[in-house]
Length: 284
Image 1 (tube, one colour):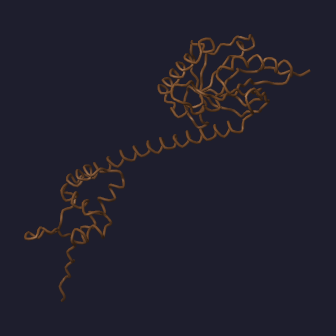
Image 2 (tube, one colour; image 1 turned 120 degrees about the vertical axis):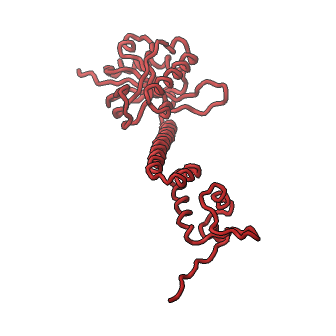
Image 3 (cartoon, one colour; image 1 turned 90 degrees about the horizontal axis):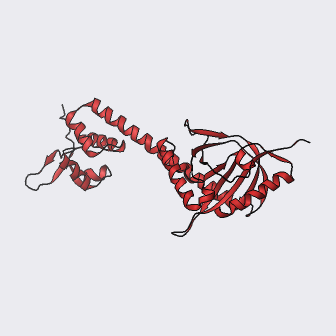
């Protein structure tokens, strides 16, 4: 009867090459007690591994791929506690889910910015009035006692900070913060009072929060504006347009920031705006 064939000893270099890792990695695993050589030549100090140790190395690599640290892997090996391993993996899965969600929101933010700049590039020039049908939109809004129309851009910046804080408080992602808008309620607009008490951001249709509102689909009179300071001067022109074209205002006026343009340090926000009034034709 033939004897069992012994597996050849593998040098540290051969073991590293076979498993496509570095010699330094194997030395680190040895130092941490994760994977120690099967045999060390006492005269030369050379380290040798055997093929059976590939199973341990595969497990280390697999656990690393699952997001576990070497310290965690070492702890599992020492304790041989598989319920502990399961809990660790569950924790890492939860972390990955959070990271995936964060990446998904970043992806949406980039898509929103691309869409905003595309709309800007294709929008009518400053001062042009249009009649547009706009689909239903969802917003998160914040009420304020500051009327920035009277107090200027500095007050607007303070309102934006308040909005950001409230969004965080209510669990609405900061990625929606881009393109904030403001509202003049219908009664104030019709009375020609330039008073804004609400600031808002558009959110995606799948965004969930008890603090969201719906802007219904409507026909809108829109006016495009390339300067924050021009908005107040353009509002009377919208009033005149409604009168001239037998249009009835049926909802709140909103000022949407189509996009913010890159600016030099210290300069005020450079915004391209779409002023909007929901309307219907007056039946004669």
